[in-house]
Length: 129
Image (spheres, rainbow, N blue to C red):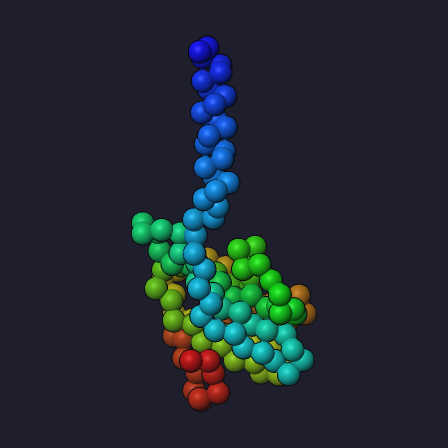
């Protein structure tokens, strides 16, 4: 068998294996929090293997149906994270975080405003678990 034929077979087999395995990362929903207008804050954790730390994402959704693998949000925390959030009305969100590293902390997302509180805690009990 010629060299180019063996290479073609090997490449085809690798592509087939990749298609069968799919995404190797796993996503876990930490919490969901609705505002009065029906917008949903979604907090989820993505793990891509034993040698990589967990990555926490926060996203605001206007729909119930979504593909979590394709979501990108306004906040990304890396490593050990404690996340809390609460709606302060329909367009203002307060987020408490104490992640090891904050990779992305946007203060606005579409027509929402996001405020951040250090330490992952609020002063009152009106918050996520």
